[in-house]
Image (tube, helix red, strand yellow):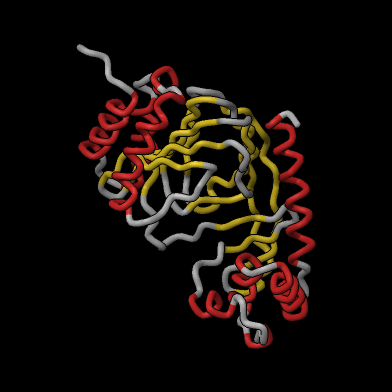
Length: 267
């Protein structure tokens, strides 16, 4: 039997999942089982990137969403309710986050420094934000060939810093909006990532910034998406309404993440 190329193997894995997937709850196990059958790190090489970019250009319109995760994202296969994607991590790292999908990722090249956490729910602040306790569960390095199972919601909370030019293959279910994807601050604040808000996008450059009229959810959106001066106003208003210094919390988390990144990249 003729050996398969990297993309031929991806297509074969994608079709096999399509043929054998009977329930969403079985997705992560099936994906992990299929990845173990092949030596994808041996088939992968950066010389393939032009070919993978071409595949991505074909797949992205079919996916119906842009792929902004990592420094460069490649959508390589689209199945019924899932996709196979490749993430190139060069300068960026992840936030502390959980997941709104199921699946698994495999390191193909480079090195992942992963830290995992448990979250203990605490005080409800407003819809989409609470303050609890983030407990470290330990850290490990994910080397080429190793596979990490992705569970949804807070069953798998992690942060990943990457050695420069790390490539991870991810096979994941589609996001359907039924489960939240949440970001965590090191001090225990947990919140849902703000989605597009047409009203606030139109107000972004408004000189008469009507921040006093914003709901708490809109303040959180403005904090993440608007220019610095408005970000500070949104942070100040959140502090006035809820007694939380969200800007300080974010700065402390950035300092924590920067240390992880310095270690991973050897700065």
